[in-house]
Structures are given as C-alpha cells and as structure tokens.
Amino acid sequence: MKRHMALGDFLVAYLRKLGVDHIFGIPGDLALKLFFALGRKHGIKIITLSHEPGVGFAADGYARATGKIGVACVTYGAGGHNMVNPVAGSFSERVPILIFSGGPGEEERKLGTLIHHQAREIESQHRIFQEVTCASRVLTDPRTAARELHEVVKAIWAEQRPGYIEIHRDMVDQIVEVPDELIEWDGHLHLHESDARKVEEAARETAAMFNRSRHPVMIAGIEIHRYKVSHELIALAEKMGAPVFTTVLGKGAFPMDHPLYMGVHIGPISPPPIVTRMDKSDFVLNLGCLKTDMNFGNRPPRVIQGRTVWAVDRKVDVKYHTYTEVGVRDFVRALLKSDLKHHREKVTYADNLRDVSAAENHQIRVGQILLAVNEFLAEHRRYMVVTESGDMLFGGLDVRVPHHSTYLAQGFYASMGFAVPAAIGAQIGCGLRPLILCGDGGFQMTGPEISHAPVLGLNPIVLLINNGGWGIFRPVVERRELLDIPPWPYAKLGRDWGGGGFEVQTLSQLRRALSAADKFDGFVIIDIKVERDDLSPVTVKYIKAAAKRSQAPRAARSSAR
Ligand SMILES: Cc1ncc(C[n+]2csc(CCOP(=O)(O)OP(=O)(O)O)c2C)c(N)n1
Ligand SMILES: [Mg+2]
Image (cartoon, rainbow, N blue to C red; front, side, top):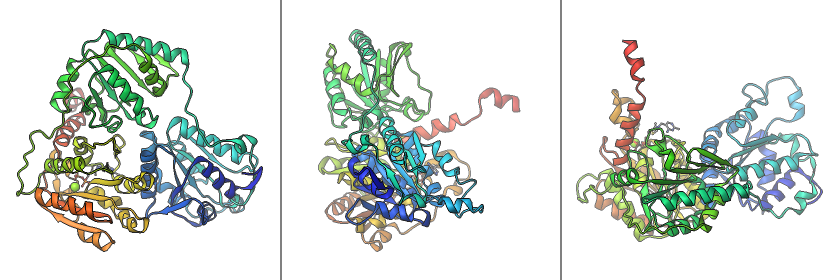
C-alpha cells in the first residue's frame, strides 16, 4: 500500500490486507471498471453467478460459513436493486457483507438527462441501501475515499451487518490519498469494546441467580456464532451442567451432538420434552438470542422476566434492569471466570421425529427424509447442511449435524432463494460439502445457480422435496390451486447442467441415492417425490399457529359484524 494510489489499486490492496480472497459479482457498464479493477488477473478471485440475488446470497453464505466478511460487486440500479433482498436478510440476521456498486460518472450526471438504470434520483440507490446496512458511503472525494471505506468496513465488523460502498465509474482511476493509519494497519478489525465494570457486575449478578436456581437452562442464539464465542460457550455450559437449547436462527451455535444439547427451542411448538423442561425452569440464561417471533414459535416471548438474563445487542437484561455496553462475548467470558454451581442434569436430546415410521417401500414421508438425512450425517463427515425457506426451514430444525459441523439457514428473515447460492458461497469459503434441503418452489427461485457448480469445482447435494407447489401454506388456505407450480425435470436438469440427478419415491431409494451422491464427484440433485399434503412435523404446528395470529383481534371481528 502506498500513500498515493489509483482507487482501483487501493481497493485490491485494502481487501487483500483484510484477507478477502473471493468477490461475488455480476458486471454492468456502470460498474465495468470497478469490476475489472477488483477482478484483475492474479488478484482476488471473482465468482460470477447468473442473477444478483444469487450473488447476494452467495456472499452471505460465504460470510456465515467462514466468519469473515463476504464481498459482492454489482452494477448500479438494475444490479444494485436486485441485491436489496439478500442484503436485507444479511442485515436482519447479522451477517457481515460488503457491497460495492458502480454508478454514473460526474460528467454524465451533469448532462441533466436521466441515466440508464436510474430509478428516482441518482442518490436513490444509496438511500435504499441505507435502510439495510449499518454504514454506507458514496466515494466521491479522493482525499477521504480510503478512510471512508475503512470506516464502513470497521462498522461492518463491529456490528456484524452489511455495509455499502458506491463508486462511480470515473472514480476508479482517480489517485486517492492513503492515510498512515491504513498503510500501517495489520488487517485486523475489532469488535466494540465492552465496559469492563458493567461486564463484571452483570456477570456477578447472573452467577448469583444461577447459583440460587435449581432447574436452570441456557439458550444459545446467533450472536454466539457471529461473535465467535462458541468454544467459551461450550466450556460455560459444561461448567454449569444445565441443558442447552438453541433458537431457530441460532441452530448450530452449540454442537448438536454435545451431551448437554437438548434441541431447538421454538416456544410452545418445541418438541414436547423441551416445552416441559422449559416450563419447569426457574432460571433462563439467553445468550445472543434475538427476540424474534420465529424464535418463539409465533408468540411474543413469554419471558418470566424475574428469572431471566438476556444478553443480546450489546446489552444484558438482568430481571428488570439493563446493563448497556456489554457485548455477549465479554459477558460469556466473564461468566466462565465466575464461581458457578455445577448441576448434574442428565439431558436427553429431543426432536419431532420420534413417531416417524421407518417403513421402507411406501411413498416416502417428509419425516422419513429427515431421518435418512440424520442417518447419513451420522456416518459421513465433511458435510454441512443448508436449508431453504418453506417446509424445510422447519423440517431442518430436526436435522442433527454432528462433528461440530455447520448448519446454515435464514432462520428469521426466511427468504426463499437463499439455500442454493448460499451453499455455493459457503462451500467456496469453508470447503465442506453442502447438503441442501430445499422445496421445489425455493429451487425454482435461485436453484439454477447450481449450474455454476462444475466450473467452480463445487459439488453440493440438493435434496429437492418435490410436492408440486408452495406446500407449506396448503393446510391453511381455501384455494389450494393458487399454490401449484409447474413440474420441472429436476433430475434431468442436474444431469444436463453437468452434475448428477436421481428421482426417488421411497426411503430405500433415497438412502441409495444419498450413498451414490456421496461417491459422485460433482453436484447432484435428488428429486424426492412426496405427497402434496405431506409436511414436516414442525411446519404443521408452526403454520397453524401463524394462521391463528393472522386473524383480526376478536374485538375488531365482532364490531365488523
Ligand atoms: C422471496 C420469498 N417469497 C415468498 C415467500 C413466502 N413463502 C414462504 S414459504 C413459500 C413456499 C415454499 O415452497 P417450497 O419451496 O416448494 O417449499 P414447500 O413448503 O412446498 O416444501 C413461500 C411462497 C418467501 N419466504 N420468500
Ligand atoms: Mg414445494
């Protein structure tokens, strides 16, 4: 890095210092210079996909799987606006990604005409992205551009949320000033600092509550994963000896084969043993859990506030008061150093698959697919699981990924189209082979991005649950035909796109297909035909609870009559 550099050269030098090795993107004329500056030969590897939503989800999946910042580069307007949905998902689920967008140059902006790809004003795209990022800048001043980029990146890391940088096409060759701070920078980023006195006091109070309790439980949420405190959390749980749940979004934040892990807590629709255990608890330690409807099975959190400690968003709520400036990482570390009573509860893992039959030769049931996946994962290492919104978002909660492996899902924002491109980004980032659980509807959104897998040297296995439509809503709507989607020849598409493809209808066929896919080098699509009304056990509970909540309040209904 030198004191004066062309902006394009500076970006590459900066990103390399940061440890970025891949950028996901699609070019356009307003981003061509930027795109090729970033993607110069022997530089950072550029990964192109077919459609910007795929680009956004891939950068997100890369960030989730690696714990590093995912980077994307798109063109202005048509490209940038296509990225809003995935970036909104990263924002709400705390995924650190950096989006570069091109834009029109100063001279063309002076012409007074509208510029192609423009929506309302030139600034509109930036304003839109301000809503879904934690920091954003349009780099227009060569004296401050380098510093402004660094400010955005520091915020992305500290907040674990997306940031946005717009670089108009005439800026890429401009010579920018690089401040000493950046020339000397070692490439490390820092989280927000906690207030040490508050951390200590919050931990002391929490430890005392824990030590007085007889039936404590711990719930681990997404911040544990994002702030990389999983190892300390395991040590803390072992010191406490109490059962650990994860939230829906936090699934994977605690190892699923750990003896203290009891399963996913999703409010009243959790597996019955989890509901019972939760009802019995006299102390609930929530670490890094967002307070979302999804995490609570569609009910507002029924927190027994007088017996709860809740650490999230750099705050710790202890009963009825709040400590600010306490990050979850520092809090977990402080608890770990506290004197804690050791409980010796014997914890039994609970899911919703207990009653699923293993009958082999009938049409396969969704519950059986999940059983087969669990069997497969128990026997095969180096797989991660990625699930798609739809029935599999809930069905996936019953998947148990052992060996400290990775589980990725948009457990809260729940956008369809996430799974296939996110799995592509994740495999590029961490090397594990993805097992993707995806509905036919979800696959029709972004699934064709799988056709990039052969060129990228990737080999996900897509388990495509084919029920001929947007099945998750079938139990609660009147006009079910509005939920139908056209049948695609999924397995054939897999083969035509240079991978493998199987069609299966029974449990034994699925087991054979999984084992063949495991031995196959390339990507594989397994088209699993299920009955139209078949759904995973959790979905049935969730969708009915959700439908109840969408009814007008009783008072409004009766006054309308
Ligand atoms: C981008 C987006 N559009 C719409 C929805 C609403 N939605 C949630 S699940 C679903 C249907 C899912 O269908 P499919 O992928 O086939 O899964 P299934 O439930 O049938 O297994 C829809 C339309 C969404 N979550 N995301
Ligand atoms: Mg479907």
